[in-house]
Image 1 (tube, rainbow, N blue to C red):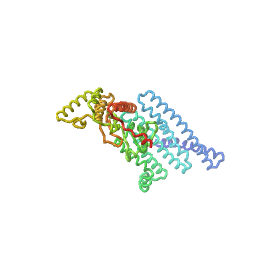
Image 2 (cartoon, rainbow, N blue to C red):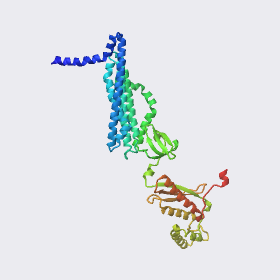
Image 3 (cartoon, one colour):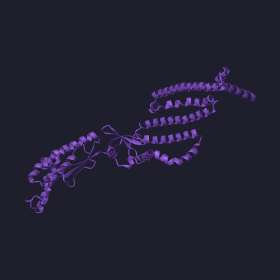
Length: 428
C-alpha cells in the first residue's frame, strides 16, 4: 500500500522534473553543450511563463471587470461604481497571475540558483507593492463613497487616508529592503534608530502636516465647504479639499489657492462657518457725518420732519415730553441749547433705527443697533449694526447697498452732510 503511494508520487514528480528540462535535454541530444542548453532552456521557459501570465492576466481582468460592471448596473448603491472607477477589480486581477509566477518561477530557474534567489526576492517585493495597490484603491473607493454621505462630506477624509497610506508605504518599503538585504524585519527596524534624525529631516513637512491635520480635525477648525479668509496666502473662498500637506481653497474669482495644512494652526485665518450656520449675516458699516452740520432743531424744522411717516409718532411723543420738562423747569428757550432739545443727528439716528427695524430683509430676532462712534478727523461715524436674513453673498450685497442707498439719500432731509475730503486735498 505504501509502495503504491510512493510509485504514484514518483509518477507525478518525474514527468514534472522532465518537463522543466525537456528543452535542454533535446538540445543536448542535438549536440549543444550542456551550459548553452540550460541557458536556452531557461530563456524559453521564461518566455513561455510570461506569455501564460500575460494571457491569464488579460482573461482574469476582463472577467472581473465585466462581473463588477454587471453587478454595479443592478446594484442600487454607488459603492460598486467607485470600486470600478478606482480600479479595484483590475488590481485584484493581478493576484492570480502573480500566484502563477510564484508557483512556477522556481522550476524555470531550477538550474540557476542565483537567478532563482533574485527572482524570488523580486516576486516578494512585487507582492508588497501589489498589496499596497489593492489597499490604496480600496481606501480611495471608501473615500469617494463617504464623500457622498452628508455626515462625512465636510470631514478631511483625504488626510486620514494619506496618513494611513504613508505608514503603509513606509512599512512596505522597510519590508522590501529587509527582503532584498536578507535582514530580518524586526532587526531592520531596530537599526532605523540610528538614522531617525535623517528621516525626521526628510519628512519634516509630512510630519508637520500630519500633526496639523489631526489638530484641525480634533478641534474642528476647518471643514470642506467652509468659507475661509486667509490674507497671508491671498485666500478668500470655499475649502474644496483638505489633505495631509495642503488645503485647497477655491476663491470667489474661481482661482485656486493652496495653503500648507500646518499654516492653519501656526497662522491666523478667518472661518465664516459661524455666520453661515447662524440665522443672519452681519451688517456693520458706518457713514461719516460732517460735524459742523450738526445742530439743535427748531420748532419749524421739527414740524417739517413730522411729515416723515417713520418719525411722526416719535417726534410727537418726544416733543411733548421735552416741552413738559422745559416748562416745568422754567427753561429759557431763547438760547436753543438750554434745557432739553432735539438734534438733527439724534433724530436722524432714530430714523435709521426705525428704518432698519422695519426693513423686510433684516432678521428681527438678532441685534439691531444704530450707534454713534467717537468723532474722527473724517467726521462723526454713525454705524449700523444688524443682520440680514439672507446670507447668500450676492443677495447680502444687494441688501446692504439698498439700505445705504436709502440712508445716504435721506441725509439732506435732516440738514446734515456726509463728510468728504476737499477736492484739492484728495488730489494732492
